Image 1: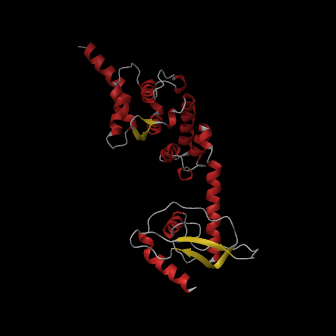
Image 2 (image 1 turned 30 degrees about the vertical axis):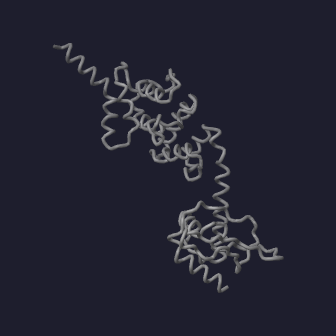
Image 3 (image 1 turned 45 degrees about the horizontal axis):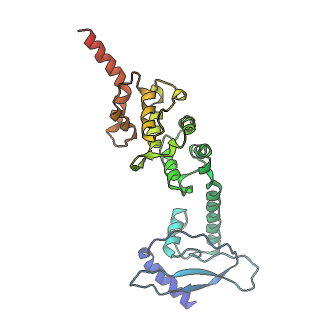
Length: 277
């Protein structure tokens, strides 16, 4: 017990400086000894910052299920503490058995949720429905492309009517391949979905139905440009360089989007002015 107390004391002093590590699942064996742990490399190396490995040890001959020690299942105590804070638990190594069992149940629930949603990427329409309805969060997704897509949708207007309308638009566009989930060429941090949501925000000003859009190109950048012209360019005279305004997030960009939408109206006024002279 003296060794255990000394170990926890050293962990508390050094937890803030330990290297980060990805979380590991709690061990599946429920028979954990409540007062004994097996510690390897208990002395933290000052030279390389290596943290000790923590392993739960099963109580010999016990048939009764117990709770894991604080930190069991995680390579480093800092990873365990980070997990606790991220999931609404106290970031401490001093926990009661009831606290630890509650954490374990929460962890298992999170893992079960991840497994349930892990295959949704194989069905883009089901994925979009789950995200737009709020049943699937970006925190539940590991694949970068789909995680990014979910985060972009989560940042859009949250009221049910807007999300339902957005979903209808995205489901129609998903019929043109994986366009909805792609990013701008050479700009992996700029998903087309960001621009599609802005196009949807201006839906009241669309000049043509989305259903009538038939992309001529299979290039994703060109497809996005064609879509913007289909929705807002009555006479085909909006410059192509203006297409990028729908993909921008900087504050002045909303003015440029208004210019795009009003381009034809301004052109008509200019023509009438010239003809009246």
